[in-house]
Image (cartoon, rainbow, N blue to C red):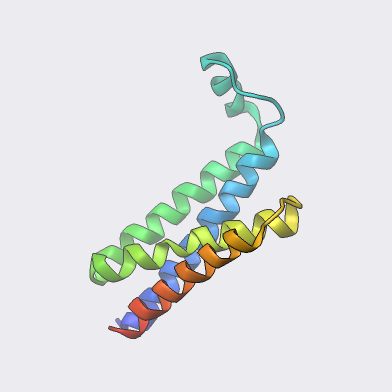
Length: 118
């Protein structure tokens, strides 16, 4: 299988994992203070859907590392940091300052360099 297809598959896994983080954040309505609060999350559809997405992204990620070097796949999966930042800003209206954007840009540049070096 083409390394570029594996990189694409890894990006899809990272996007799903990022969407799962969004669902976790949306589903948790109050501060978690103990085991009882954590167990109650099993009844929260949004959190459960996030868990399903996270497990799905793990399955895709495991497939990707079985097909390509870990030194390519794992840094590509770090694109989830980029996706989460943009999802947080767009959907949760979180503030993303210049310094954070610079950090995200550096992550993106690093991922691009790794993808282009294969």
